[in-house]
Image (cartoon, rainbow, N blue to C red; front, top):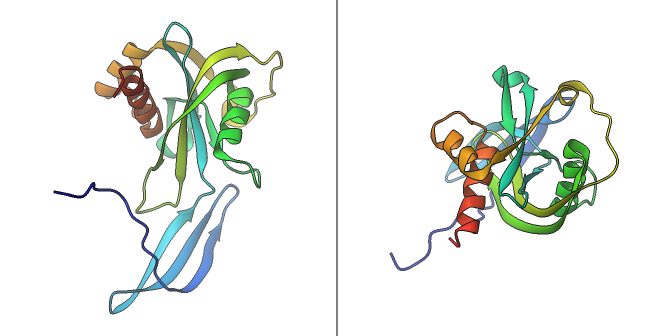
Length: 189
């Protein structure tokens, strides 16, 4: 193949769009659009996007949080992350805010790892992954509510986190991708 494969934008004519269900955090939208010689209707979760952070300390340990996630009925291990729900806020600014809110940390070095669609057949979510280094405590602590009130926080050696992903013990897609991309970045890939 002579060209590099990559995802590419493709616009369709939206004939109608309505909120089929209005939720607390996000909505389910029904779009009717022209495609090929006909029309299609698709429903999807309209998502504002998110930012996730691989916080890596000087000993190459990754900060992971464990919290309850009701849709899967599990307390899964995750990277600090949050919604892009502040109007006009950049993904990097959201990542900085979320690292402070969820882990009481700030970082002196930020690198963008990637941005990915986690489930493009069912949601518009685009999550931006960042590597944060040169970490230090913010000196303040945020009040955490709901599922965040009883979060566990662990510093996990990067190699151990990689093993947990490969062995299927960590099944959160954002965590898996962030850990693997961080390992690749550190190894010069």
